[in-house]
Length: 209
Image (tube, rainbow, N blue to C red; front, top):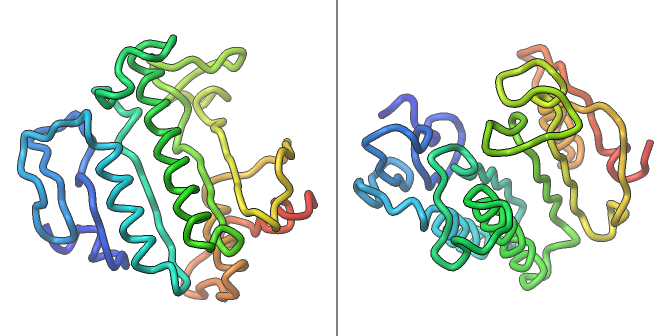
């Protein structure tokens, strides 16, 4: 409840759960109201999040926007959509990842359909390495470890016309670099009331610098 809801921290719109999906009760919130009371059918969480995000993008496509889209999965307990369940060679974990991949694809398709892909930077990453359902060979460690398998995560940047397609980079970056990168690209100065430890990655992303 307030003052700890996402809307109390600068977000104009929020849709999702307010804690990890292994905790009960688990209602689905829209801003400051419960949109769906528990129990939730978690098999439908990924497409429901995606539907809400697409509707929000469509509403804001005519002006600059920032969308922070944090999926509940692959946090456990895992739930795949009925359409994907049982289809992956990697079991339920693979089914869930396929659902997430489809979600990102739907968002990208929306940007293209609305004609704003060339004006939109899409970043896909994770907060930590996999838990026991995933595998990060040949790296050592996983979530909660300080070995490389727990700290090193995928990072995909997509921006047609600005970031060359198919390029791989070995540069070291960290999540705290995203704030100065986004502000630099938006032409917004860094806040002066705090220490900013991150660095602007825009030249590395667009020019390989």
